[in-house]
Length: 544
Image 1 (cartoon, rainbow, N blue to C red):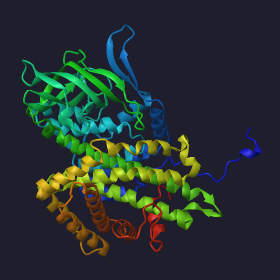
Image 2: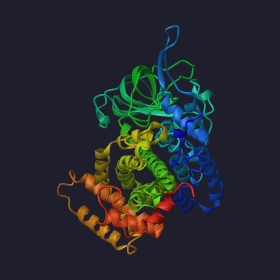
Image 3: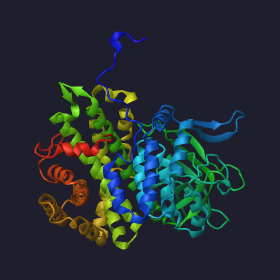
Image 4: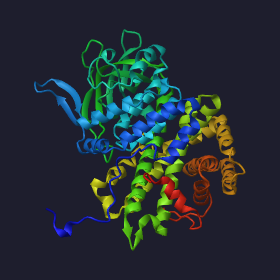
């Protein structure tokens, strides 16, 4: 029996038993905006079901279990045979199976596939971000494989399957397959052209033998991997199956799993190739060109994942402050805390709105939209992923000491928050990629300016920001050293344009005042007090 001093009061109820999708007003509005009307009932039902599952106590517990019990490497079996397998907690397999069945690898074969998958990605991130890695790699491998129609015909149905088959066996015998990726090497990092993995041609057409070391191999338990290696005519993309058609294991020597800051439920490995069989994807010497569409898709997933992390952090903070009282009033009703929450909610909504707009461009597939993606994806990847960590840390602070305790879930979000900024090219790589697009592909800038110009005249602060951006773009002096500043402004102006067109007035007004004008401070919670901050916070509340 609890003692009289153990009565618990002034604590919020757990944020469970709710629809993660339906409670996210920015996300639901974006889906309705970007999907064809005839798809809304079907997709809305799917996303609502996923949202209810994601908000359930059961799945939230699975996410916690998967992170508390990280994967373990098993190099040999009991008899001394080399097996190179990664063992996962059962919760991991349950979550990964749920993600596959929810269509997170099936975007390329469904109408409105990228928008419906993007929304699901944002929702599913809020359960466990770790299992999104193999889902993202599998999704992103499809456009790269299309460089070889025969390979695409063989592998696409497996990768877009909505059945999770965890067994290591020949892919032709499986109901569905997952893919990983290995580009980074010890000496190169993002400079993939410096890779030293060697590819020796074999007698079979398109067949090679690989020898080398990959410093980071994502999702090493997968059925296949896209990797880069140096062939006789230069850097080339290869498909490495985990199990060969005859049932034997390919040479895929897992040296160790990385001990990471976050993303702990997921395995990242160092692997050795030593006579490893591989199939060429695309032409010799065009490895970067072949794999670049995969990189673009995973970069967009970085934006989506960061948007999901921010949304969950903001939802937890607003929920806590709605129930918690201090100094005679609920925290959410106190002016300074309301300012902090509104500022966080703005960042979250801007990220979600931008991410779904980019997903819609992927569905469109037209020349104009492809040009927009060329500049908007690296800009969004740079900015949204960098905003994720300060948002999540500030949200944890809203919970006070409770936010520093593992049981709150916020420390897991904090550890996860820097990942997407590092993965698939850190900040400088994205900023330099934006410069390349500006300098070599004028159609990309034209598409961007046409997009932001759709809001011209609707807000004087946005108009001024567009004008200032054009001035910066016209000045080429020291352009590389200014690449981060320029990329940040490109992202902010695009977010502002989208919010002015699509968000409620109180949201777009606060965003333009604080992000495009000079009415906001550096820290969160420095919005002008004259704004309608109560409405902004109410919009972000996960439960009413």
